[in-house]
Amino acid sequence: MGFKDNNPKWKLYYNPAKSMQTIPREAFSELHGLIRRAANDSNELKAILNGFSELIPCEPTQNWGWSFLEQDIALFVNALESKVSRGRLPSFMDCLALLIETGNITRSDSND
Image (cartoon, rainbow, N blue to C red):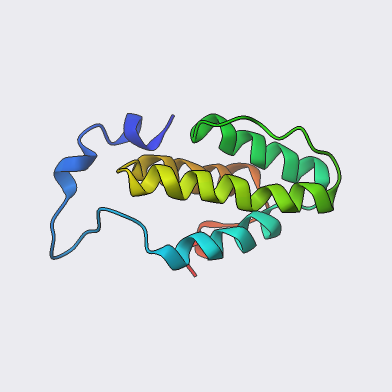
């Protein structure tokens, strides 16, 4: 179940005094570190990146090995940032949820 499915009227929540329509640029650079921290090994990192590919959507990674997959993180984060800049905030929220559900991080990690 995705963010938009759980919150079908999410655009109505917008209140300029209390909400945001986009994600601050700094959050995307921090997302790199969260993705690395969420994976214990290259298999988990590949699963996370391929999960992101379904949510963004974009092509899944074809790479194996930590160092190659680590280079792919920037590609996926940039693709996500591009989607969010065009108003696809739910994609970002779904990717965070995926990190919490499948990765080695908690909700509080994602809020730090």
